[in-house]
Length: 158
Image 1 (cartoon, rainbow, N blue to C red):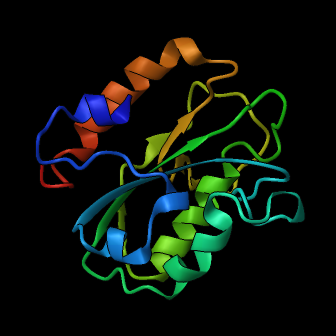
Image 2 (cartoon, helix red, strand yellow):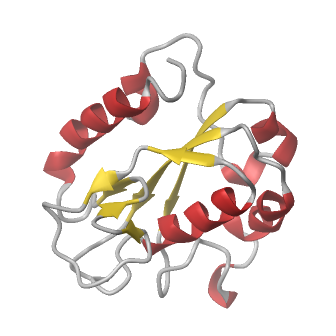
């Protein structure tokens, strides 16, 4: 949905992080990275139950990469009703990884319109990227994606 909203031939096709290398990411000046939140607010693959999945094996490569000069927009998927204490918290972990590697993050998103207790993806009153809840607010996703994509396009050079 995000890729379709970008509607630009200059945008590469989405890549599953399981099939990506750090060189794949370093080839671009701008990135859009996303993740679901699993367990107690972790990136998939960083807990014992999900080893070898998604971000688990890729996170150390990203952590040691040089992302200086890269612009990154983030999005996270979560369930604010079933997991109100860790809503989209994996996006916060992803934020820490990319900023720790020197990237500039754009596309912060307001937290109004959500009902949750806590999230490590908050920076002040805003999420560090687009927060999506397909379980409870799927009817809002299309509008949220369109608004967010329009807001990040200039920062991504589109």
